[in-house]
Length: 156
Image (cartoon, rainbow, N blue to C red; front, side, top):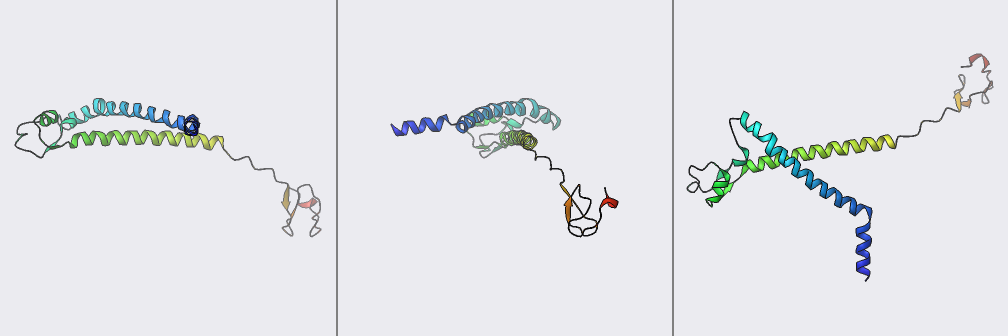
């Protein structure tokens, strides 16, 4: 019975629930970014680079099976061993975009924390230095307690 209670305590802690929500939102965000890269970003880039479809870029390890095949799906259908570097390029771009978005979020959160935890304003000075002996004396003093200089003529 103790193990079940410990698990309930563990699962009910705020950090675990926050982490689970973060993972779920992160997975959904990753899908959105993958779609944006594959469906919105890469087609114009491929068009500019001469009608290249990055998803179909591959290097065949079985040239006999892939002779004349230009699609990754058809090469795999033919049973050829391929290195799908176009898919890797898409995944790499996905990663860079997700990492940059996370960086921007963390940066914004850190700036918000810094604003909320700003240091208290400095307290007003309670003393000044004597112009003759450089010792600290009260602001309202008319005579230095250390060197007995008259401060009324040097009042600030």
